Image (tube, rainbow, N blue to C red; front, side, top):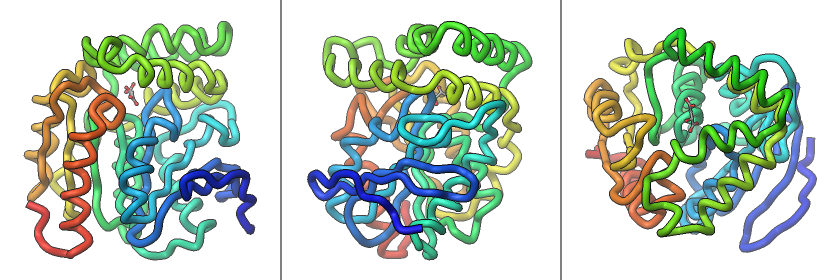
Length: 284
Ligand code: MLT
């Protein structure tokens, strides 16, 4: 299906197209090595604004709204991380991208990246795991997600924004960059409640990935914010240690949403890694 272009600013191409059984909204910029940016919960592709701008100067950046988020189609029930990974593969097909891609996933986007590795390994050139977790939810955490899903369906997105915003950001974020904080809040409030609920159920159902980490053999960069309260530096260091040959970077002055909270340090780390991946040499 030919993509329907809606706007084109600063070289960004924004459109909505059919990918498998769903219509996804995607923003693209640039040419060359394809890099797929997978957003976290309860956000959308706009969290990657600074990376679309910087990485899109050198590479082909592809930033979709996942199923149920942003301007993409909402499907009800449970959206599993595997379904989202399959959606990414279908999106690449729809865009005519056959060559292996770099997948960059933040938090929930990292859960999706793990599934992409598992199911679509032949399409993966390298991985960037940002502020994410390999473990599954505890039964208590899964129950809390189901409760929140019910509440969101009843009351709208405000409960998710109130529960998540303080956890996502480092303590200094509201003073340092109030506009970025407001932009995250707008994304959270603007997301469709049914889509958020479906993703909450999907995250609650996700499997423990810890035992698979040692089998990842693509070049991998592991990034974490120094003050991340959800996926801590120690936990992310453990992920990096389990993935042979991976690179580990701690981003200063940042909580959980490193690409937004410290885009300069984040972009520097990822650009250096991507340059090495493109050259095909060792990444560390
Ligand atoms: C995210 O940022 O995507 C969420 O913190 C993931 C989660 O709730 O496990």
